[in-house]
Structures are given as C-alpha cells and as structure tokens.
Amino acid sequence: MKLRPARCVRGITSQPWARYSVKKPRKNYIKALPHTSLLVFKMGAERDDYDKIITLEADQQVQLRSNALEAARQVANKFLEGSIANNYKFRILVYPHNVIREKKRAMGAGADRISQGMTLSFGSPSSVAARVYKNQRVFEVRLVNANKDVARTALKRAASKLSGTYSIRMYDN
Image (cartoon, rainbow, N blue to C red; front, side):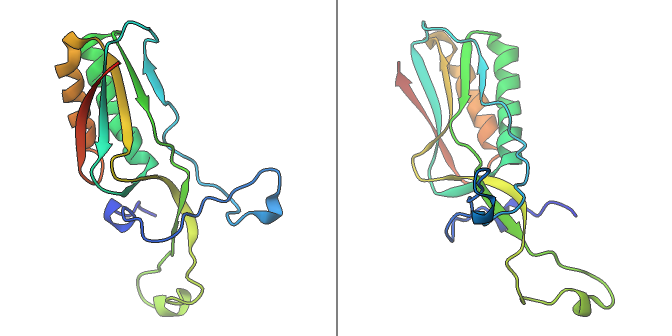
C-alpha cells in the first residue's frame, strides 16, 4: 500500500503511541514496531575549533515522519559535503519514536463487506514520526564563521523537505 501524504499525520492531536518494550512484551501497546528510515544522526568531522552553531528550529508544533527527516538529512549533508568537505559537524537532534497508525481501507466492488468502516478502527502501525514542538531544534551544524552562508543554504534546502515552517538561527560556540 502506498504511503499516505504527510498532511494526514503532521498534526499533533492526541497522545503519543510509543510504548514498545523488549523486557516486558505483554505490556506493549504496540506488538510490532515499524522500522525507521533515519539511521545516521551525526555526520562530518568531530573537531573542537568550530566557532558557530547554526540550527533549524520549528516555528510550530508538527510531527515529522522518519522518511521526511531522512530526505532532509540527505539533502543538507550532500550540499555541505560538496561545498566545505570535512569542515563541519552536522547532527539531527530529534528521534522518530512516535508510532503512526493507519486504518487500512479496501476499494472497489464489495469493499463495504470487507472494510467495516470505523468499527474497531484503532489501526495498525505503519510508520514512526518525531514530535517537534515550537522553538525546538531539529538540525544543528557546527562550523567556522567563514562557512556560515553554506550552512544556511543547506538548512534552507533541508527545511523544504519537511512539513511546517522553520527558522534558521545562528549562535556563537
């Protein structure tokens, strides 16, 4: 089944569904955890001589699926790697832990007999998302002051892959 559009799940409307325990499987609300597309959280070179921190911060609360975070990470990291090679440190500061559930719907002739409408419509786990709140940092780039325009461009490209609106802020390290 195809992936539903982000507008279906980007709002934070209810409590999170994140209870998955390896130690106590009988206490799980979620029996099988969907995989996350986001596997790499730190990129670039670990050094101590960086003097600027440029962050991408959310202007509103939003849920970001792991595949959207992975797409934004790839765009930003590719631009940074091509422009300033190993003179940066790029980190993702949110983790997709919230399980998104979908009620599967059958289409076509006789679908009303198969899918029972909203009866028992708790849904099955389909993907995972990170809950991001207002003014929370999503991405962070550490670099020297001379390369700050490159980092701003990379974060602007990354923000275009994510739902919601974002601000790029600069801090001294």
